[in-house]
Length: 86
Image (cartoon, rainbow, N blue to C red):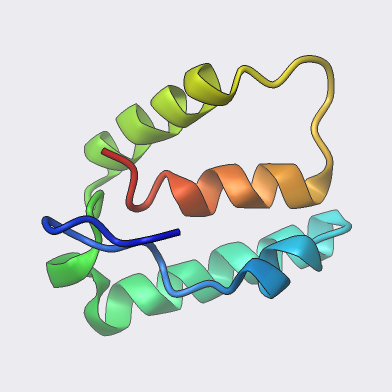
């Protein structure tokens, strides 16, 4: 995922996303994202407010059009992508 000129994604590697296999893994990933937001993300994330983040999350889901159930890794990818999605 490449950052946009106006902001960046959460600092989460594709390997971290792919390793999410359970609710516990997902919770750790979200905690990591929150820590990243607290360190520097508010000034750097594309979607650093809850309003912008939720709007982007909805757009990511609509654009990807996932059908049926999602794996934990797919859900993790969606929530990370929404941090920098335009």
